[in-house]
Length: 544
Image 1 (cartoon, rainbow, N blue to C red):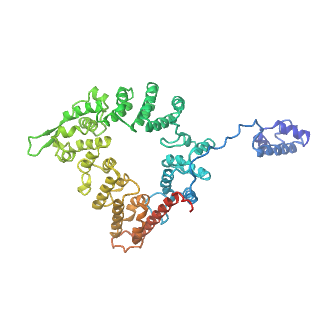
Image 2: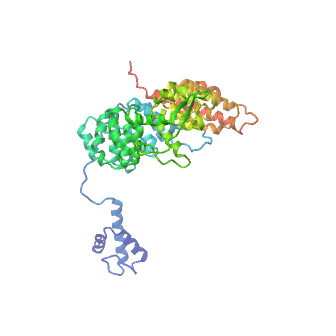
Image 3: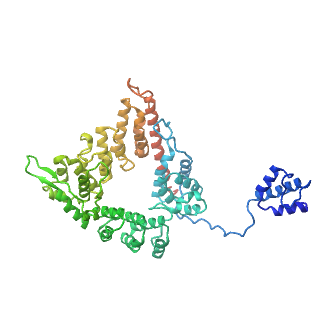
């Protein structure tokens, strides 16, 4: 390199854009710095560009050496069986099918099986294969519903990777209840330091994890800093007390009723009303009982309601919201809140010693039945009272199958959630046998997976009836998708007879027969695939 070229190259360490501009304008109009105009200018420009190109391609400038990257932590859990590892790779390589209710083909949607696979792998305590972690974190990045199970399965190495890739930074926040950054609850000093110095998400995770193990310790930790927390943070922290809620929380929650935040006060009141023996519940019982009574002067005993005429300061302090939503009358709004917060044990004594089922069957005067029974529904859900839930649900074979209090499918689903899994499945199976599948989708969503045999049979039989009737097939695509994920895999053999294309009635939707055959084929294939997945996750038996 000539002396002139070396001078130009040294003087232009970071002036690539300047060289490009000079080349576009021409050296007759502009010359590189340090070079005189003349015949040597074009050569000097090209030499400088060549030197700059080498520097750009080299990538990094010389710098002080950084601290060497520490190895990823070890994962002490047992490795996946080889077949299960191959299955995981296939699930992660699949892409979700197009959304909507159109035809999906007969192939299973593998990505929809990933949540079940992760749940089964976590239940068996396996460690994720290191080579699968990038794809697993990418899947969890795109689907927040996967994150708790995916991060638990990924283990401690997920955090190590997340610190190296900004796209996986969500793992550093870790979903409460099982993420890799859950604190070590055996380290009191570490717990206190994280509570005092951690980010908000880390503190929520800490409080939730500690609450599940030692409810009193979690509450004591919260009490220490309660007065200095922001209102929105107090609300989130208070919500963590739902886990393990008990009588020992009452004193703290009573103090929270005087909080300066309306949302905090309302949450504290809701939690207290879920404790039937709390002082707030007793106050609400007295108020509610003053407005609901039994009229024995009529031929048939009747419940009468006299809604409150005002919402006083004491009611507001106990969580009653004074301003009614648009379209609601104030008095009915206040009444509903009082009845919802009153212990359900109030009503048998107040209404003649009757059982919940007998109370629900009583007529209610002056059109107050919907409001009163709706409030009892919310109370049964809040207090997790199975007896009242059964009374309000009624028999699944009854007209509309909702009972007098369950006025919507959403309310029925919430009431069902208070029952044990077997009773829940039996009720929904009875509902489907009487009313079919058109109204059952929301109810199926609260049933335990895999579905109990009576429920599975009811769903399959109803789908078969809909197929034979030539029903519009795409209206059942949601239930069919649920069946793929929730039916017991052992049901696959019962479905083989449904794979043939049926004869279509004259009034059937065009192409309905082939759609039903295709959908049942996909259902059978998916069930067998789920069965194989579970078998692959079973521990390998030692060779004899």
